[in-house]
Image (cartoon, rainbow, N blue to C red; front, side, top):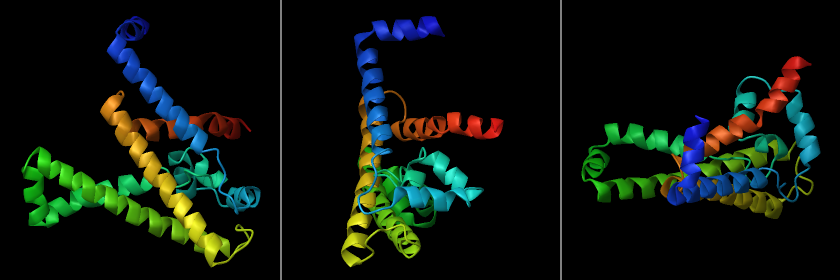
Length: 199
């Protein structure tokens, strides 16, 4: 295994792809630490700590803890994954989409574009739900229309950036970028999970 890794780094093209993927992963992790202005992140974390079991703990793992911190990438890659699943189901149910999928490269590009638009739509819905749902609980410091609008735009933009980074990693990096981002988010929460398990 180590020999294979050393051999991969000797090849210039593979080395560039690995470093490109690592750079994207660093950007994703930094974005997961940047808090959203106007959100009391400490209060949000303490609010979630009491209920962070079941579905919320999985969401926290998928987002690499950025959901708990209500950071720029709080939605992470989840809207993209959801829209991809919806599109796969719709290609079975809608004949026009099934034809598009069979068209080859052009059809796949159209389906990818629809998936991207659906991702942005889902990100808007999810971020609006988060902001309205938690805004009344004191998480948002100055709860008014303008603040809610700004936070929805920031969360949606963060999700779109993660989607774009994942696609760039797939195109110019190593492996499926979306899967690699999801993996690094899950792995990044493991030390804390082990600490909690030990405690």
